[in-house]
Length: 556
View (spheres, rainbow, N blue to C red):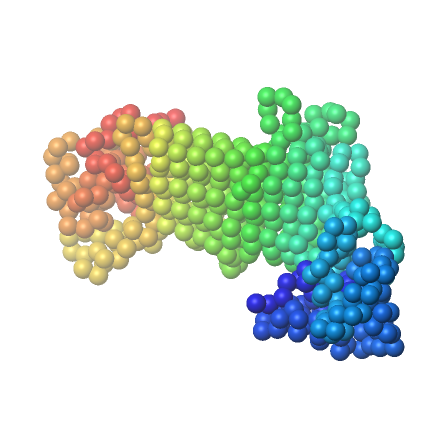
């Protein structure tokens, strides 16, 4: 079994009177097949050991080890015992003293070791033997120091790299770019604590030498600023270096508000371009990320999790532009609160797991990537919109959209309509690349038409006729007669079935539900005659067309 970092630190303290530098600690703990006895013997062969102990007698060696380990001289009886312990060679004396420490010696050694470990961590990979020794010796005086002094030094050392933000005391936060940088020293994982904060704050990392790739924001928010005026708490993460390095952001905040409304934290990590994971699963306060018109859009963000608070999220999977930017697929796991999630599905695929609670999920799709929404329990509203990609490319919205409804009375809004004069136009469009077929069309043409319909299909799973509704804006819905139902069901292809159903819409109705085979569909017209690009097609799972009633459709 490999030696532990604690064992190595204690050998450094015993033999050299200082903490380990990171390079040495890493080297010795990586010796998987070496025992602590063997490593203790190896320490006694180092030049640093020879410089200290090379000219000392056994009695002087014992006394120096006592000073390094326990901050005191060896008592006469102790000195006599170790001088006469012939079975313990000089290169094992330090280990024997460590293993035999009891009482106040053990308490002091443990406290000293914890402080040494903090000094090593703070120094980081660039820390030197001289550097850690100086930090260690200036914090406490080795000779005569007590366990409580080492404990206090350890607490102070940890606090120096784990700062606290308090209203009115902007140790690491303040207003915008004037906030002082947070010096996490050599740490690769940093923590900032919020102490009942309200108002605007910032965490600013240094422009050079920052190694933090894993950042944790924890603590409490109360919604009050330094003047006790009502003000929502907000925090900006600002990486000062030219190259962003934070890949993981943990947010664990709770509300300390005394009123009936819990406080929330608006957190902005948009400058952390390397971020891949946003982990807010442990937060009980509401988290607000992004804003309308300024949604969080990070190319590498792959996982976003929120906790049990009422969260508000604005997220884009890539920059909305005519040029394609390769971005990671993003999965959002919202917690049990009543969450409001607004997103643009662009270059990266998006999966939204809304969780329990009465959630509102609004997804504006560009047709570039797949969208999957699992609404979860609660009375949820899912709104699917559409938008153009850039200024010249028409919307190819809602392609590859899959919606699963859970328990509760859910609403799926799939049609945004605009009216000009007497003409109503549907902005919900999924059908692209479609060419109508007829009796003279070839098999290949029919297959191509079916493929175009299925490519833009919106599937709604777990649709409960007793609880769920489709919101169709100002569109009206047509009800097919028995004869018309027969005409649709006799179609030999999906494209023929859709065209047949569309032919029964008349002059005012713009949507119609029909059955084709074992599947139920709702066709939504875009305002022009016939099936063409810009129309919408929805597949409902868990219900047949004959089970649908007017109660399952709402109209503005």
